Length: 299
Image 1 (cartoon, rainbow, N blue to C red):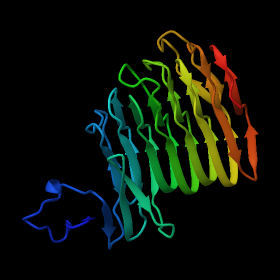
Image 2: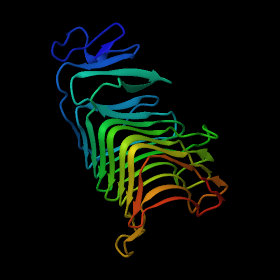
Image 3: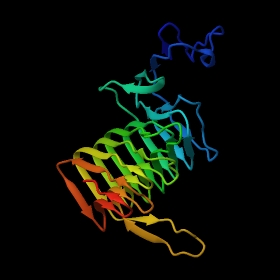
């Protein structure tokens, strides 16, 4: 790992300078001269990060197995950045508003990211992004990527960060999984959700949903999808019953949504913006903007 005036090498660690002691300007890059190894995350206890800081997952292929990665902070913004390389190369470290981010050259071969029964969530008082860069991204078995804004007395008119998926080949969102940027039911003030920005070659949403929704008072963001080859939306989405012991399981349509939901008042729905040469909907899937609470529908 190289910084503006210092470096740390795992092959030849310097006793005088430990990686854990590096301070100061974090601008620099992560370099690998070998094929990066796989990174597997398994934790149900959750991982935390200090206020105004970033949580970075960098490797070769990155897999989350039955894990909960949750940043829930009513105060300062935080960010989660996930990505990696399939071969030797360099990932730039950039800084914006004191938050570290990963940046990739266009010619790099990226790795694959898998979420299996795992949830990655960023819920903050204001701001906070969730970014994934990969060759292929797969969510399955009720996995989630969620960004939300809570707001509060210290953050009037707060706005959430964005959920950005920059995937070279394909995104597969499967078996009850969810990608969402929302004003959640726990929001404490009138707030604005961020956007969902998806850039890929192929997007498959099967028995799953991608959405920008409002559950309290607020404004939804834009669901923006650029798929160079195709978008395929298939099937219905399982809805968790209020009481699993007595209520029957339910399903609703899967697909793409920008909605004002029940419980919201004086709210504004979001916008769905799709750019692709081929769009397939089947087996009950929908693309929908709607109002089920009080407010105005998006488009």
